[in-house]
Length: 150
Image 1 (tube, helix red, strand yellow):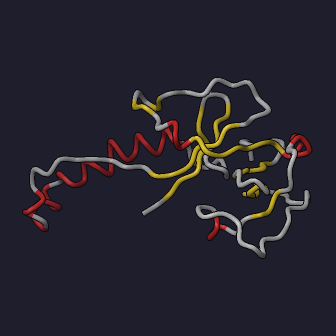
Image 2 (cartoon, helix red, strand yellow; image 1 turned 60 degrees about the vertical axis):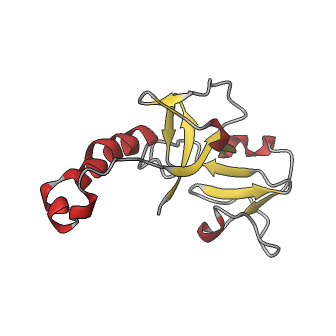
């Protein structure tokens, strides 16, 4: 199981490292990975699954930049987005001073669950992107000023 994190920027949902995008991932899942269950080799090895219906569940969290007035899309490739998954925020490093509460940097293993009692306060020194959680529990990505370009 993979849980993905996507940040809305200029109409596209990018992964925090800007190497993937939700539309590209969704297209790959729908047009490559799901059809593999109907491939003759798969059916030969798993005959009980022949004719099974295909369903896709993508799990994750979507992030918007509260310092931008960008409209939030309601779909991706014509498929509706679950707006309850728009649960986080992101900003450029140059905007982080606008966040009005303390942040705590998250280890990757804590991205889903959030900070621990011993999580370190975030200090504004990171070169790449960082994932944090605020004192009130809001999730934040802080990305380099040139993001999504690398």
